[in-house]
Length: 89
Image 1 (spheres, rainbow, N blue to C red):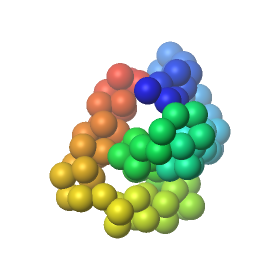
Image 2 (cartoon, helix red, strand yellow):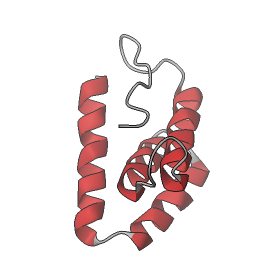
Image 3 (cartoon, rainbow, N blue to C red):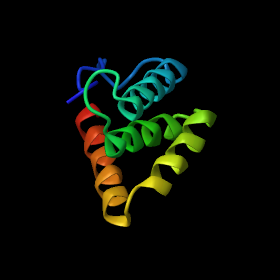
């Protein structure tokens, strides 16, 4: 899974802005297929995480991904984001 190695510090990610940008870049890579095949569900997950950290461009990208995915695929992406957050804390 691309970007599964994003570093987690004790107590969570230390720098909110850096985390948001790292999540955003992961979303871009997944959407473009830079590290593996194009994965719009994973892209939505990363954009969702970046948006939750306040990244404005990620909010737009997340919506673009949602527009290309089925309702069930969006549910999978949202669940994956929640699961990632559980592991991070």
